[in-house]
Length: 210
Image (cartoon, rainbow, N blue to C red; front, side):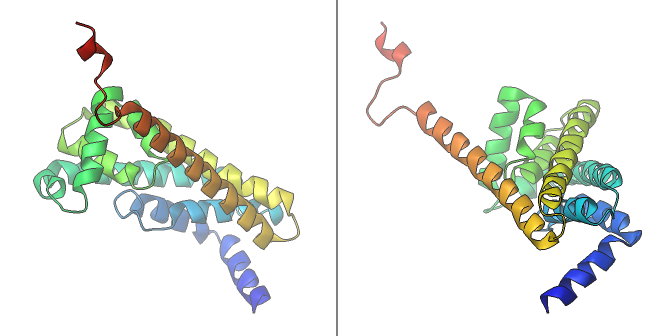
């Protein structure tokens, strides 16, 4: 059974249609974040290293282009439906985070948000909702899309190269690296947020200086 699944995946990865599929998944992930775009790119990277197909450079290219296109769709959605999105019960907290981060760090937050679960969509929608300059958005989003595609593709490629004759182990290694990095990012964010909030009853330094 496992070998049959592996053969089917390998056949799909060797098809020229895989590039179109990766582009579509990366694009959809921009405004429909439950789509497994990153997992698909990592998987393609694994098979690129272990079997030679697909081509890892093309995987990275189409993933970056798809992510760039999807983010612009999300930006456009934010500009047209900002009030409904901003007042949604589930999205309110994500929008508050994205607005605060955007005010503090500008377009660079778009690059950082790419690696935060749910942050990418919240950030691109918010940038559209607050009419962030489109040219600046495209510049920073290009950096974000390319960095994400390189990161995902190379993680898979490293896993596939480590287990050249066992793509499943290579995929598990690649996914494990990605999950570990995500956890580290979240732990750092949580720690910094806790340190930034004064302890209950503690007066800020500027309040006690007088």
